[in-house]
Image (cartoon, rainbow, N blue to C red; front, top):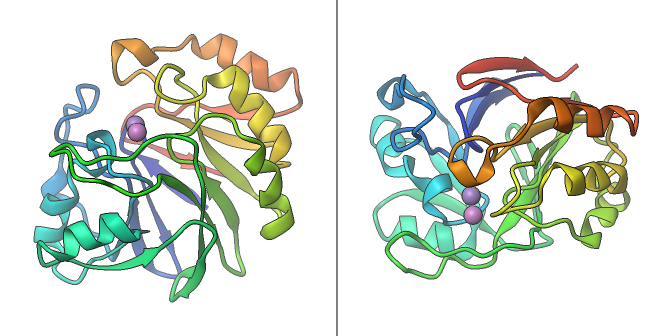
Length: 228
Ligand code: NI
Ligand code: MN
């Protein structure tokens, strides 16, 4: 499977021909100057939680993609439904079969409020699977033993997107332990380098994974990633 990294925690990918964007934060990302939000095509927008660095461009993308559907928690989807957007409001532990695959909304240990102060419900992550692939998107989270449940609840993971930047989320040292807990050798890092607090030493991070027999990919902004 191919992912495109748009910086911070934003990725685009296609499943069964459906275009999906995760946590769009492009316009205000200081590390993504080539911010072509206008050109983004999306059938679905996945939102892990309500913080501004994950929902910044939701409305701009929805304006250009009138049929787009949000997938997130009840509070986040309700917030955008009040603005005229459509969505699917899962809650922690629930899953639903979409036309591109099954999505399960899973625990994340973090917080979730909108930039305007509105309540954003509990933050979460996603496990997504269909006949071709299964992957975990942790969202902003600390390391938590709940991650051990993912291999029990879901098909074997082909890869996982984990935050590695520390300060607001777990750092790469904890992300290595997370990779062990979810039984996954192929990790794509996110939530690093965007702001001063979350700049990381790439070599040290990659080496920390390598010594545990795991591979960490730290993509550049607007870079394509092959997860195989
Ligand atoms: Ni956050
Ligand atoms: Mn964040």
